[in-house]
Image 1 (cartoon, rainbow, N blue to C red):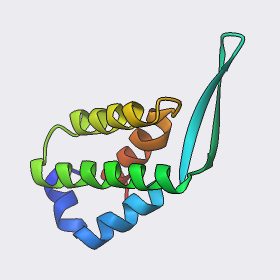
Image 2 (image 1 turned 60 degrees about the vertical axis):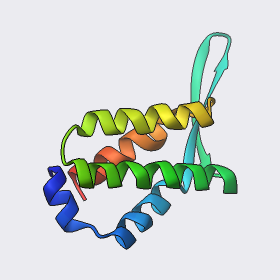
Image 3 (image 1 turned 180 degrees about the vertical axis):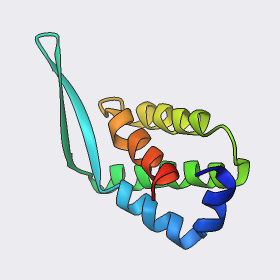
Image 4 (image 1 turned 60 degrees about the horizontal axis):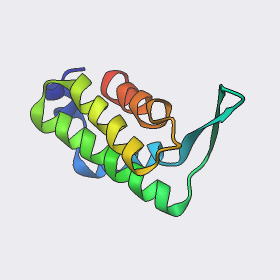
Amino acid sequence: MNGMEFAQRYNDIELKEIAKDISNSIVIRTYINGSSSDNRRATTKTEKELIQNIAYGAMLAYRFRKTDLDGILDMAEFTLKQFIPEANAYDTIYIPLRKVTETW
């Protein structure tokens, strides 16, 4: 779905609900002896709020820019990584947002 279709399909309230759903879990990456391990868990209150705001902002950006989805998703991933360095931001926010903009 392109940005125009996305804008027509979801209103602000729906975007906030989608962002809330995305923010329910986080993937934490740990390293043991040089090998990485990813574990999904429920978010803390602070993590949930942060992820929700980043996801909502990214969806608004796509709604209003209607182009450059990859750049918007990359920025959401980068932003999350700045605030929660131990997060696997790709699995936590990039993939869920990609699914929202393409399949929901």
